[in-house]
Amino acid sequence: MRSTIRSFALGAALWGIGQLAVAEPQHGIAMYGDPALPPDFVSLPYANPDAPTGGQIVTAEVGSFDSLNPFIRKGSVPWQLRFFLGESFMGRSLDEPFSLYGVLAESIETGPNREWVEFTLREGATFSDGSPVTIEDVMWSYETLGTIGHPRYLGFWEKVESMEQTGDRKIRFTFSEDDRELALLAGMRPILKKAQWDGVDFAESTTEIVPITSAPYMIDDFEPGRFVSLKRNPDYWGNDVPFRVGTNNIDEVRLEFFGDETAAFEAFKVGEVNSNREFNVARWDSQYNFPAIQNGDVVLSVLPHGRPSGMTGFVMNTRRDQFSDWRVRDAMLHVFNFEFINDAMTGGQQPRITSYWSNSPLGMSDGPAEGRVAEFLQPFADELLPGALEGYSLPVGDGTERNRAGTAKALEMMEAAGWTVQNGVMSNEAGEPFTFEILLDQGASENQAIIDMFVESLARIGVTPTIMVADSAQFKERTDAYEFDMTYYRRGVSLSPGNEQYNYYGSEQADTPGGRNLMGVKSEAVDTTIGRLLTSESQDDFVAAVKALDRVLTTGRYVIPIYQWNISRIAHAKELKYPEVIPVWGDWPGWQPDVWWYEE
Image 1 (spheres, helix red, strand yellow):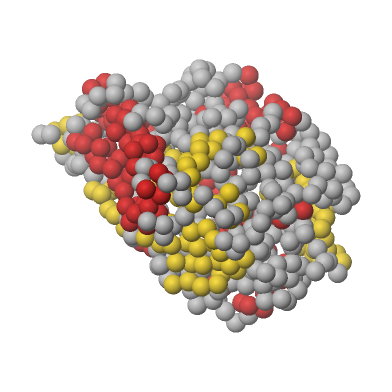
Image 2 (tube, helix red, strand yellow):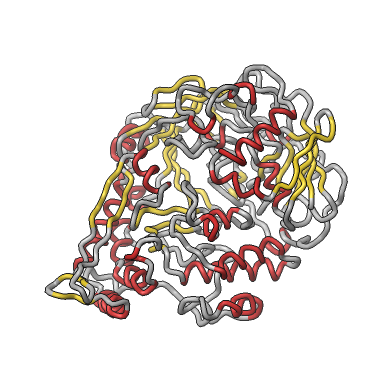
């Protein structure tokens, strides 16, 4: 299928930064300026309003699950459920940096400085059991999620000064802080049915309760650890809402769970699974030649996108003594033989992630910090690590297995941190060996292969780590409690970074169980720079603040980056179709299966 990717100019998208919002009801809202779509838009530009309905999409998931509630901290939950089970006031367009359009809300209104936001609940909105969505459900959902829900919801709630019903179908949130993004975040919280949770400990729910939803899909059947089947609600109330026209066309979305990647791929080859994302380009090139592809029953789609790279790799826990010293973390970056690993894993075809916002206009520039970026960083010069102001780039190996230069630099940095090789073992002055544990999720065979090569490189500097492979539940439990030295890390970032950056890297989140600051960074420079990007009053300041944050995080040497995916590779049954227009976000939650359809 021929596809095109929509593009945008960052400057145009942010043209209205610092402008005051108009205090009257609107059909949508943008972080800066106005949303791109007019009030009378028919459908999202990357949706097909004429798409047929029917069929099923089946994906393979590695691991297991023991809960169906994606809105709490406890349990291992299929990650997709968060996007399927909680309809919200507003929905996010994947074709703009950060714009929302009404779903449960028929309109949104803000104060002149976005010090408050008011939503009008759409008349006729119902839950999957047919009962109406009420303002009482809304208020219960916000308070419950903000107090005992998953940590991702807590930061917003702490900045809500008041929540009040202002009409039969109206609710207003007034904020305690000057933060333009809060008005948008308020529109993105899932609305749950209060009565379903009466007399139930919401925070402890597992699989005994199937959530009632106001969204297009509902859980139809499941077997813990094996599958979840979601069926399209034939009585979904919002089919004519413009944001939903041309979306949610497939009758059944089925998640099949397997013990490892090999079993999952074999299931796809024999037709038990009909859509598979492939992240390994070498496997894509060498193993996608089985009979179903040869006879045309399976289609190979390569899809571009305009997202930042984000950060994928292996994170070091700075709460642990082993990685509290940046020089040790720097040594790990040098001994990690990326060029050799990339050649072995992808045939050298995948570019390396170079910073958190690489592959985008928000990524840090080469060379010394200049202009506004330098101004923002200069007050923290004493705190910043080498490279933040002067310029920094990741170590580059020579491509050989021994990587002599990288090994030598790693030894130098370890010595600077007080560690030397004694009788073949990296040790401190007291003769205690340097070692650490690498925690991996069971079934992640690609990560295990990468770590095996890393371990061989570590042996050259006298370091022998322990590899711990945990099942999905144990892995989540340990990472939630920060009980790891090093583990796999994936953090997606956007073209409109905002309050979520506090969750990812903020000092207040570093010790919060179940939080997302896995590296444990506590930095005044990070906290201040995040605050600056949230309150910027010009496009230049916003971009400079993100570039400055990128420099602080990258030179913090918290993560050993691996390769980035600037395109998506999806193998899928020929009956599964998608529109020719691909949004700037590309293959992202909100695209598959949302705007796909099944057609014989």
